[in-house]
Image 1 (tube, rainbow, N blue to C red):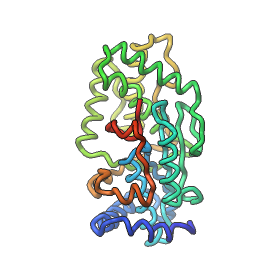
Image 2 (image 1 turned 180 degrees about the vertical axis):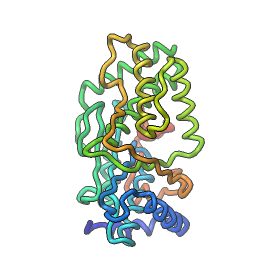
Image 3 (image 1 turned 120 degrees about the vertical axis):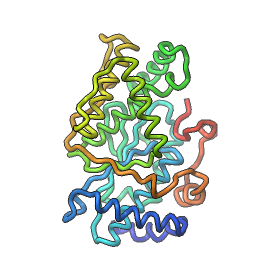
Image 4 (image 1 turned 180 degrees about the horizontal axis):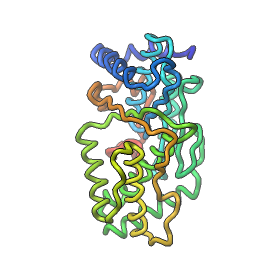
Length: 297
């Protein structure tokens, strides 16, 4: 972590005093939530990274938390960052991710692990990784079949299969290489409620089974696996269901959730200099017209 002190000093020039203070409070909460208090490096923390403007700020904030704990304790948690890729993510997204990792000194840090999930394939991040043709074709088929099934309703056409794929990538990344202890999220209460409402809607629509709630995150994934099975069986036919349409829920560890929304807002306008100057985030002309800067179609 030789580059971490220099990165911490540089990034603080782009953070307001209020953000630095909030991060210090958040680092105390995060430190208390880690299960292994004696050997902090044994704790594995997962953060999902879509490659857009908001999630890029989230990566910077969590990386800063990791550095704060290291400066204060002389040791820190292992950070795993995972990007679920789909056919609508073009090369500009991968270049943005690369520049963010580069600015945050994550490429050569043994305390960080940057992954790309393509369908069921997990690989270390590299900006020039080619997306498998099978994944690209599956994404196109999903858009076509979802649009047909839901009569071209935009959100159902473009989001249902993508959201289920994103959930599966959580399971894959959370189980990968021994698993993780904690999953960090920055979703607001409204966003969390919207996700739950979406999952419940699909569950009722396709009469999916519900897993034991006491199983925590694994149980949540198992419930969504039931949703995915019924959903894609309805869309494609039960005899056409593939492993790529299921949700991984047998995990090496059952991680807890840690929410940082209460500590920091992640709207791009509030952190423009950090995004555009420090991390050199660039907006793609096509994707700039969408609500999600990592997803054009």
